[in-house]
Structures are given as structure tokens and as C-alpha cells.
Length: 331
Image 1 (cartoon, rainbow, N blue to C red):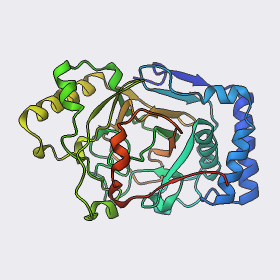
Image 2 (spheres, rainbow, N blue to C red):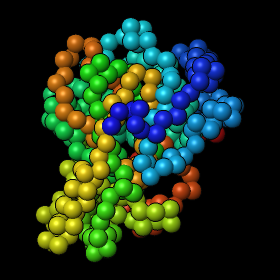
Image 3 (cartoon, one colour):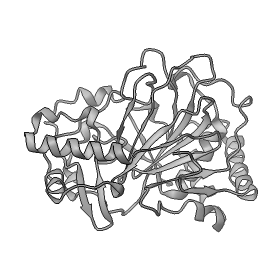
Image 4 (cartoon, rainbow, N blue to C red):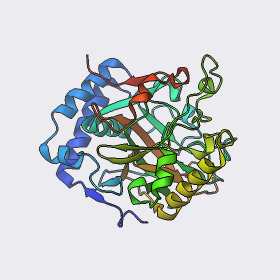
């Protein structure tokens, strides 16, 4: 599916200018987009002053697709410089766009970061990295990134995932599939709403993978919330061998249905894909990286929505494999 077929929210020139001026003001004041409490407080202040028009574009996902594309931001391909070789060397690359994404995230909810990922930054750089080509992480390239819930192993995972496109010369697609579009039998739903097997930390969380203080908790793949069916899904890190044959068969049918309903969203620079992380699994098609400074480059932000009740209450008792989620809260 192209972005033209996805739900699109088009920003007009005035609104784009409003967002850019707010980001420029913050970048001028701090000289960096690196996370700090004063910077986060200024972001919250600026986002609180947004116009009603910009706030309307940041309203919740409101279709069964579980996603939308925010379109119209300005990206100068030459000015942003080469695609970083990896997240650790990105430094301040695209700092203005870090702040723009953080402002949008703050307008949508509460931005989220992780102590154990990308140095606790609230905006991540997603680029192909040498030596990580075949991993099931955002740094991979030559393999299909399996459809998954972002940070599915953790009870404090984001409600919204934002992917802002800096560069995508090869039109590499993000895949997405909504649980609200699948067809499953009542029997399969009954099985999959039971906590049968755990979801383990992915390769981006090396410390969490070594967590041994408590056993991995089994979690349900589906949950019937008051708002409708939601899911928590990451087959690449789900040890299905620990489930019985009946559960494995139902899980396989869920996986097949998500594949059948999957759409492809090829982002262009200046577009931001916003995904409801409780409704939609996302992934990425394989591609051949060049490592010449022109590869696909996304910015990623995660958002919690305070008070949202779309997850089983039992999640509150999970240990999260020792990983601490950090919220961008103003003092």
C-alpha cells in the first residue's frame, strides 16, 4: 500500500511553519536534541502552545487501520547530511527533526525512552548497520523484519509508535497489519487470549536478555478491551515450543491472517507514520544496504497515552526483564 492509500493527515504550510519555528527555537536555546530535563520541559511548554489545527492533526488514531501518515514536513536531503553508519555515530544528525518529532509526540501523549536502548534518547535513529544485517531489529536490512508489536516483551511499551522519514531513495516499505482487520474463529480467540507463553526481549536489549532474577511471564497474544481487540505479538521472540499443539496452531492462524491483511507503506522524506502499537504489528521488507550515506534513514519516537485501558490488568505485575522505561514528564 502506498501512502496515498493509507489514512493521511496533510499539514498545510502554516502548520508546518508553526512546528518548525517551535523546533528551531528549542534547538537555538539548547544547541542539541540530546535528552535533558530542561529540554523536555521546553518541549512540553512549546507543544502546549500549539494551535488547534496542529493539535487536531495529532488526535488519536481513529480508523480500524490503526495507523495514519502525517504528511508535509520539510526535509532537505543535502542539508541533513549522510545517513549515519549506525545509531551510535548519529550524534546530532538531523537534530532539528529530532525536536520536531519530539514535539509531535508530546502533542499526542507522553514520549517514552528506555535506559537500555540508544543511550536513553527519546528519538532514535533507525538505519541499516554493518554486522546487523540479519537481526530482527531496526538495524537489519537483508532479511524481512517480522511483523511485531514494538517492545512487546515489556508491560510499559508504547501505545503509539512514530516513524519519521529522513531519507528513503529506494522506497523501502514498512509493513503493517491491524488486528481489527483479521478474521479468527471464536475458538482461536479464546486460546490466544490466554497467557500461554512469554515474549522475550529482542536483540536491541542485551541486558534484558541476560535477566535471570525471575522467570519470563507468560502473556496473552490477544486481549478483548472495551475499545475492541488488541494484540501483543512478536513471533521472532516468542518460544512457541513451550505451548501445546492447539495453541501453536491458533497462533499460526493469527500470523497468517496478519500476513494476509498486511499493507506496505513506503514513506517519503517529511512523512511520519503513526502506528497504534496495541492494534497494529509492523515490520519492514528486505533491502540491500549500500553503506554509502544514502541508505534509508528513519527517526523513531514512542508515546504512551495516559489512562488508556487497552491492556490486561495482569501486565502491571510483570517484571519487564529489569528494563526501565523513562517518561518525558515536565517538572
